Length: 235
Image (cartoon, rainbow, N blue to C red):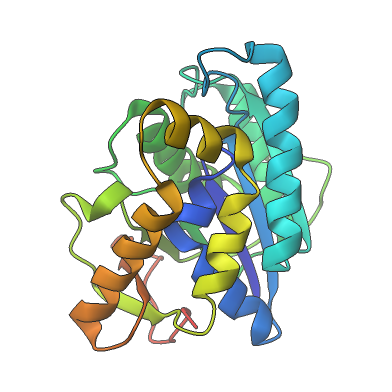
C-alpha cells in the first residue's frame, strides 16, 4: 500500500503516528510524510526564516529514520494555515495524486490549535477534490476517494481511539525520529523544563495500557460516505 501522512508542523507526524509509519515501512509499504506548515514560529530566539530552514532539515532527517520514501513540505507559515487557501489546497491535491495513497493519516477535528484543525479540513477537502478529473494538476492520476484516519491529539486530550496500532517494536524508531527535531526538543527541555521524549513515550505507553501492549498509537476513522471500508488499513 501507499500511505500518505499529512501533519501540520514538521514534528507532528512523529508525535502522533511515527511508530505506525515505521511499522508500515517494516511491513513493506510505501510511506510519504507531508507537513503543511514550516514551523517557523516554534522558537523564541531563532528567527522565523532561519528556523524554517532548520526544521525542514530536521523533518527530512526524521523521515529517513522512519523509512519514508519522501518528506514533502508545503511551506506555509505557522498560524497562517487556512483550509480555504486555494493555492495550498491545489498543492495538497497534487501531493495526493502524486503519492497515490490507499490511506491518509492526519489531524482530527478536536486538535488543540487552529493550524492542526485546518490541516485536517484541508486533507478532507483536497482528497475529495483530487477525484475530480477537471481539477487539473501536474499529476494526471485520478484517485478514488481515500479513507482517512485521524491520529491522536497531544497528550490524548478529548480523543478516544477506535483502533490501536501496537508500536512496541517501533517505539524506539519513533523516539529516534522525534530526537531529530532538536530545535524543539532542546528548547522545551532548557526553557520549559519539559522532557518531550519522555512525554511522548509516556503517551504511547498509556495507549498501550488501554489495549494490552507495551506501547501503542490510537486512531479514529473519518466517518463519511465514501471513506469507509471493510479492510484493515492500519498495520
